[in-house]
Amino acid sequence: MVSPSPQCANHVMEKAASRRRFLKFLAASPLLARGTAQWGLNVAEAADSGAPEHTPIASPNDALNVFDFEPVARQTLPPAHYGYLATGVDDDATLQANRTGFSKLQIRARRLVDVSRIDTSVELFGTTWKTPIVLAPVGSQKAFHADGEIASARAAGARDHLMILSTGSTTSVENVTSARGRPIWFQLYPTDAWRITQALVKRAERAGCPVLVLTVDLPAGRNTETEARFARKDTRQCASCHQGFFRHKPMFDGLDLSGVSFSFPGLTWEFVRRLKDTTKMKLVLKGLETREDAALAVQHGVDGIIVSNHGGRAQEGGRATIECLPEVIEAVQGKIPVLLDSGVRRGTDVFKALALGAKAVGIGRPYIWGLAAFGQPGVEKVLDILTRELALMMRHAGVTSLSKLDRSFIIDGRRQ
Ligand SMILES: Cc1cc2nc3c(=O)[nH]c(=O)nc-3n(C[C@H](O)[C@H](O)[C@H](O)COP(=O)(O)O)c2cc1C
Image (cartoon, rainbow, N blue to C red; front, side, top):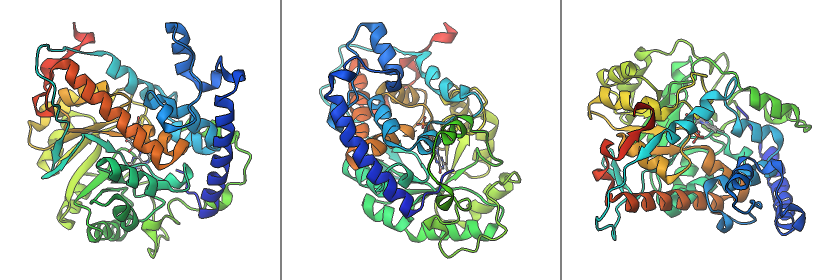
């Protein structure tokens, strides 16, 4: 994971501003009227469909969908930071599966329902949110924009979304909570030192976090080849920003990390039990995929599950989270809420996950594309687009509130 220093963040901001000016110029230029390969898949798709080719967006309001932010993020970020954002593991097969998994599901739309009023709200642990779309924990956000987590939190506040803050945040939990204006959830990476875990948990509690999200899908490292290839293209001197894993992150201020390892292959259910006994916060496990682990989570008193494969950046299992969701839902039998993330890019994806039983969905890369491209307004626009697309699909399918959404709205194309 990258760990940018303030100097590095300033450098990113200056570079971002000048690239944005350049992009505005390019967007208006006939040279780019036909687009180039670097603007990615959407250009090719547009050509196939006979639609006019895309030009890069120069402001958030130009975006038609969340993908429109990605090429701007790519242009704006230094190669190593873009690689960290884009990467999967090994051949990026799980990363791609997360997307194709959604496309294998079809929606059964009901007609002649009065959809003049749509309710997209959800309740999680006694708190109601206007939308089921959650900002998933993403570390090192100052590597993407100088305002980092503060910009994301302000956007989440402006649009009233739940935000989960990473252990690897480049801003403290206290400052992000205050920028958000409502309690946030705190994501915990375990270490092999219990005293560090305890300190992080107590600090999150003191900051008012009602929910602790323990990430369990990265106990022993990963093979991020795409990230490594982008890093080789980066000619900057990065050593000063990348000293020590997490060591200069605000959540570790004042903690003695000598001898502490963030690679923790010894992570077991015993740790989960101990954590549960240590904190008053609700405990949610992020990164489960199977019915066996979902059942064990319920047995161990866990309060919620996020079905996640870290956006295809943990292990190369090749399985989309949307394909894992049904067995997890079946195993928990409604006893605890289940959320899902990884590959959510459209309101229809949100619709499908909720119809299959998820209470809410997390997004990672899409809001970071918005952040990298335009800061807080970019994040706000990404959230607006996804919420608007979800509401539109609900209207089309005759679903007036999310509580009315169930499996009857989904056909699994593979099983027909
Ligand atoms: C750049 C980046 C950093 C991430 N950092 C964390 C993290 O610190 N903790 C964590 O639990 N998950 C982290 N994730 C995973 C996200 O929480 C989430 O599971 C994933 O991004 C969802 O997939 P998506 O990017 O396809 O939406 C990160 C993801 C990205 C892209």
